[in-house]
Image (cartoon, rainbow, N blue to C red; front, side, top):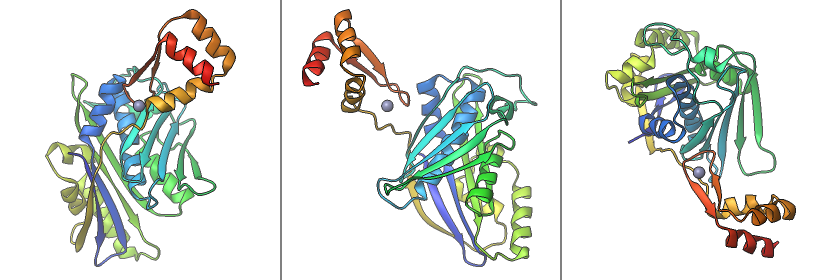
Length: 291
Ligand code: ZN
């Protein structure tokens, strides 16, 4: 079961959250048949979107993370609802690149650094909030750190890890975001930096079976932690036959008539999941009558 846990510290101005996201990233791989480097890049983007969505308090709010790094993967998009349930896709999921080191996927090269990372927070009010930064490394976590620093003026440490097995299934996936509240003293900052360094990368911690709570404990050594609520999260798509129908109608009369003339069943796939919506010739005729 995937979940997000929130944490505060009683003795330092830090807020944090961590995610166990194996199932949702594995589901994304199943849906999109992504190769390992694409699974890692999409997975990291899904993990971060999930945590950012879960931070939103408004009921129908959503958080979108769009990565356009100019690399061979093309655009990566992840959308979360306000409970951390996510969906997403990567434009070119069947990209293969040489490893960067022993068992180390070259996510940075696959994503690219010639472009931007954009966050859209739609709180269902007038205008969505949009913030964008130049890509830094293409490894997603560092790019997100730059986003938080530049667009939200919040010093943030972000770590994400996705490990893919030889058979392309996901072995582990998870990560954390640590944020310093304003006026954090220098001692707290250096303690945190030391803790993050000592704990090391997320993937090995997940491989050792560490939970999100244990990972946060490892990166905040010696601090008095308080774990707040946990939220179950999953890969979730909100597509429906009604929505697809709406999209068909919006094609307009001319195009629908053409489809009707062809007299074949139309298949419309969802870009986020493996749903396949079929519309037979009679149904297309009925849509035409509705127009
Ligand atoms: Zn769908």
